[in-house]
Amino acid sequence: MKSQWLLPHRFRLPGWILLVPALVFGVMVLHFDYKIPGLVIELGGSDIFCGTQDLTDELAFSLVWVALIAIGFSKERFEDEGTRFIRLEALIRASWIYSILLFAVVWTVYCDAFLSVLIYNLFSFLIIYIVCYEWMKRSWRRQQEDEE
Image 1 (cartoon, rainbow, N blue to C red):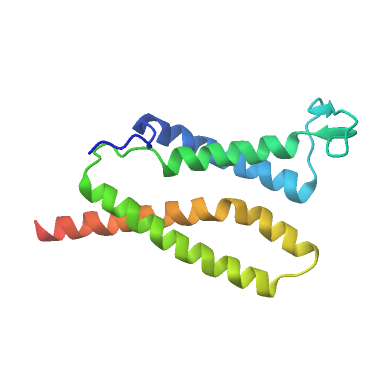
Image 2 (cartoon, one colour):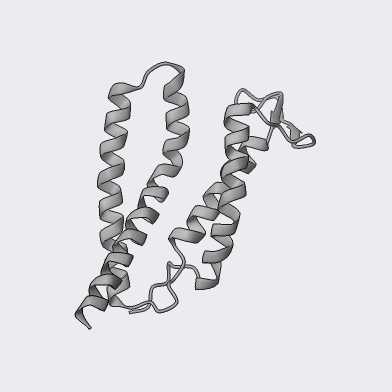
């Protein structure tokens, strides 16, 4: 069965290459209030969109998100039923870990720190999934090698 939802394998390496500068950029935006001059737009006068908006934080978010999606959802060089099973197991494990962490955060983090934690939490599911998937894939390969 062919999966229609995975990106081609060639997206994986650019995802890893983009992730490092995107994370550095995101940390600079979030913790050091870095702004790119010229990324300010003038918004209309409605209740939701008013005044000016700097799009530096949106750019940082988008770069990290695109890199994580490219890493997490690119096909392997040789995609088979075993790989699909590992992907599913990694998604299930990541869902459980993410849910437990989110529950813990809701009950232990307060005030201004809560907003920062929620911003990081936007990326944590994909990061947990990638870690689980890569760990399970390596474990499965080691097991295959030991059987040979």
